[in-house]
Length: 110
Image (cartoon, rainbow, N blue to C red):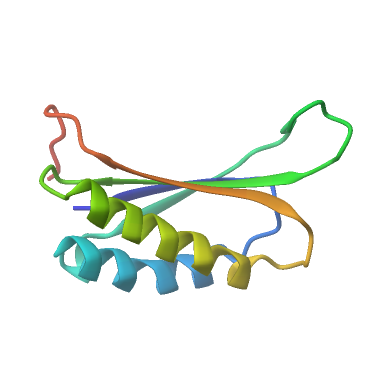
């Protein structure tokens, strides 16, 4: 089932983002909505580039079962990237990124 981790230093509506994200991910990868799990990890400090600009960062990592094509992963990445700004609590500029990857063979869920 999709495991989603969000590292963020920008003010983010975490619950709203997860509730909007889960149906998109479930549909894109053919998983049940109930299988989506999102963890949020607030990042205390980030440095972007030469550090002269104080920019917030949000990175979404989505692990899915093996078998999704690279094209399907790219499409999902674009949808998630477009969703993120709607859930930032301020108009602050943030560096946003998304990665869709396959689970390792050792992944088990119970």
